[in-house]
Length: 311
Image 1 (tube, rainbow, N blue to C red):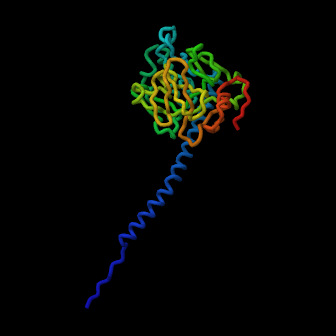
Image 2: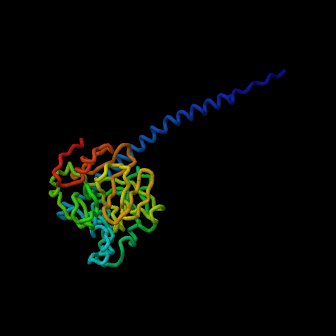
């Protein structure tokens, strides 16, 4: 009489237990993986801001001045037809392209401006993405919005107040290192380069809820106030940005009431607890969102005589 051998295997209950254990392990590992990924993204953002800081220094070393935050000044009611190159909608990044290994793009930009042959936003290079100017922590970074070209995650600091105050609607006399038609030297930063914010980061807004496009970080059509930032409000503030009408809110990227005057963009990031800041000496430090408003505003001014209280 032949006796059949029983096959060994898992019971249904054992299989369910194993699946449950695996699910628990994945649940425990996922936050750790996300934490490691964000740490890497934060470091990448910091390294890219360091590159930008060095490029700004190289520009000053070779030309004698830092680039202007807005080469035409900010938009206001009579911006058009006042003797400026209306077609030039570039910003400070256009000046430092040779120092971030973008010589070909720089040469094309200069040829366009010299020939007076069309808007910068219509140029072929306007849709080229450049990783140097993008923070990988921002899920909406590296975007091209509805014919408005490439957007950057990093903005230079125009000061501790509005970009377009009532008495200076083109923003030609602000208290930071970069503003409308600015041409400052590093030696003009009398508060000390290590005490003054030069570059920080922003989060991209929504194009779909901003009249078709959100201008924050816009690089090649900067007629509106979206490519310099203010230290008026602390990092990651819940106070929304005012960028002259084209502002699309997202969670953590709010918009305030929009107006032509008194514009500002605040520093924001997806890093836990603060933002990376490139100081005037091109070093990068992490500033927490809990910083006092007075201390943060002091970092935005170049010659206010304030004592640095951020450690």
